Image (cartoon, rainbow, N blue to C red):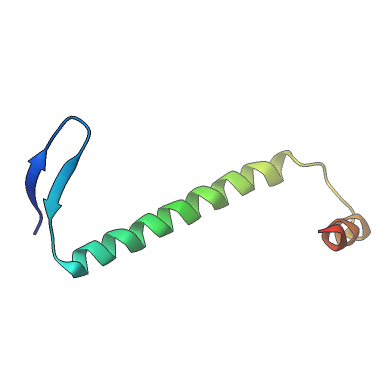
Length: 62
């Protein structure tokens, strides 16, 4: 259970269990990863098509 201790226009102070905090941090990491994957999928869709040899050359350049 979460209890709001203090709330100002720019900050909220809450009290919660360590277990819930850890879960929120896991969810935030998953959200950031999903956001990165979605962005990379958009880039992949707009990138020009490559042959296998062109793709391998590109990977080698990285």
